[in-house]
Amino acid sequence: MKITESVKDNVSQVYIKGRFDAHTCETVDAYIREKMEKGRHQFVLNMEKVPFIDSAGLRVVLVIARDLRGEYQGDLRFAILQPAVNKVFEISGLNNVLRIFDDAETAAQSFSE
Amino acid sequence: MYVRFWGVRGSIAAPLTNEALSAKIEAAVKLALKAGLTDDWQVSEFIKELPWHVRQTAGGDTACIEIQAGGKLLILDAGTGFRRLGLDLIQRSMGSPIEAHILITHTHWDHISGIPFFAPAFMPDNALTFYSPYSGLEDRLNHQQNPEYFPVPLAPAFKFVHLNERERFQIGDVTVETFPLNHPGGSYSYRITQDDKMFIYATDSEYQGLSADSLKPFADFFNGADLLIFDAQYTMLENVEKENWGHSNVFTGIDMALEAGVKRIAFTHHEPAYDDEKLGEILHKAKEYLNINQPEAGLQLYLASEGFSMTL
Ligand SMILES: [Zn+2]
Ligand SMILES: [Zn+2]
Image 1 (cartoon, helix red, strand yellow):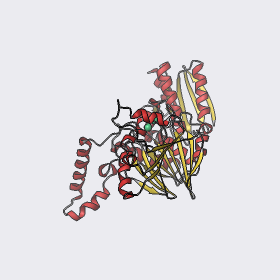
Image 2: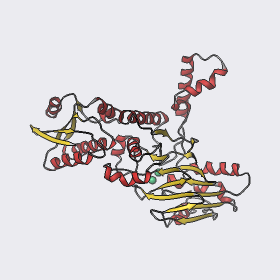
Image 3: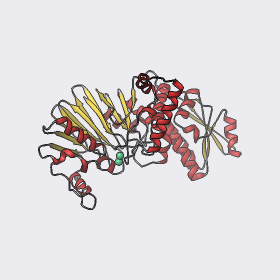
Image 4: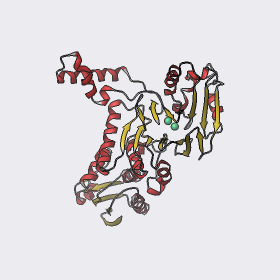
């Protein structure tokens, strides 16, 4: 799993590449939590290069979003879900509580609404 | 190895309400009108085709599973379903003594509240033995039947065997192993092996760390099971809301089963607030999830319901 970040207007765009599952979920979790501790609380997770997510990945993003909302008035939002990942978000009900956008820019702008 | 569910509800018994029964009848009649039934003989075939949640109910009794293996009767947990199993055993035995080995996962009410109502305990010829890794199990069960709570003390017929946290022992040809789970106050999984069949009961457990490393000890214990019975009390969202309540969900169950090379998984310990429609939907979503993420996997998914049985 490859993770990179770019920051604009206090919103962190996190790009992840690869399968988001039991073998990689800790890497994503640790990466975002490290940024959180440094004071960043608005994240867009760019999922364009993520072909697969399982329950481990789902739980990680759900818990991070909950913590960001509850403790920092922040959020973890999503851009560009691949069809299979989008379907898994729907099936697990995550699409009802997480904010998902078709492109990264709209996702980032949603924080200044 | 034969497995039968006598109680599948978690936390507290949740009998079908009149309202829910009426809704089932109404749905069935509407579908019958739509299907244009005209004759009595069409009815039984028509009922078989009804959606599961209209035709059946998961049941309201709490945790109890019967296993028949190598000529031995094993019982897992003694929730309210234990009462009806007791009555059935008496009928089946036709007067001959009953020998039962009762494995207790933990002593939350939904796993022990059938014990005062287990009729075979009042017949002195029956050999009934409780097993658990709790050294104080006998005390706990005695307390449950203190006169403040129940008019009759714990039946003297019960014997107790104290197990270690991780133990392997024999009941005749049957090998039984224990493994600790994540649950407030503790809970234990049981692995039951006989001939080349392996059965796992893993109820009342929460998996918060879902990394491959955190799950490895569980995946190792579940490895290669013919049937894994798994606590899937909550939806994914509710599981995170109810963090530290000690339960899990179908998606985590599927991924653990896949990791462990399990052949069949049955979801149990149903949330008492979920009706049959919701439980049917949870199973449906579990199947969709498996189809998308691992379409080639041979894993079979089941929703545990009262009376549901399987031969491994
Ligand atoms: Zn329970
Ligand atoms: Zn419990």
